[in-house]
Amino acid sequence: MNSKRIVLDTLVFKKPQRISRQLWTLPWAEERYPKEIKKIRSNYPCDIVVAPSFYKTPLPQIGSKFKKGVFIDEWNCTRISIENGISGEIKDHLVRDWKDIKKVHIPKERLTIDIDKINDFCSKTDKFILAGAIQRPFERMQFIRRTDFLFMDLIEQPEGFKKLLSKVHEFYKEEIKLWCQTEIDGIFIMDDWGGTKFTFN
Image (cartoon, rainbow, N blue to C red; front, side):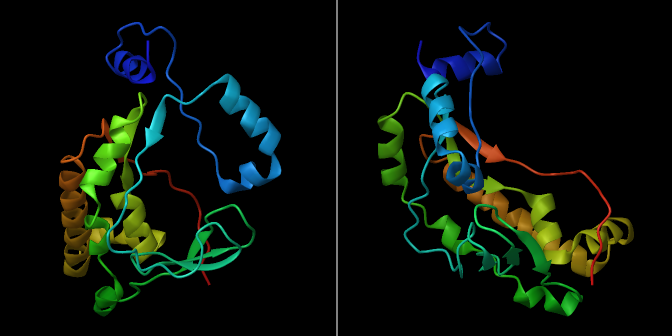
């Protein structure tokens, strides 16, 4: 039984041969525990892989996401990392006032995936394949707006908030529709709805 069948059977509660597996790691773990990670992957190979995006237009990013220092992502959000191997935290929020919405870059570059190359990748593996893009609307709104401001926006529903949310929502819908034209097996949607205490300067 191949990996894809194991995952599919797991999803429909069809008593798979064994439970399906996917190991998530950050470069931090890879750099510090290479032997241990290699052993885990050797003993328990993943059944789920992520398809490369093969963007025809490079994403407008500045810096390296997993390197110590400043990284500006394709939405124009700035992260600061205090050590290598982690993705860092958003410190400089784009939209402090609704006139700042113009600072948000809707990353249309992510809509330039090479479908032929993605399908070729899919044809060469027996793994369950996820899209090489993550839709994360709530977290993205936090990154753009700031968590405490966003919670207030959810209560007060100002027009600027509705406009920004609509932009994020419409982009993600377009991205999902595009990936659904490929031969992947699943769309990767995630978010973090947890709340905690934040302190901002």
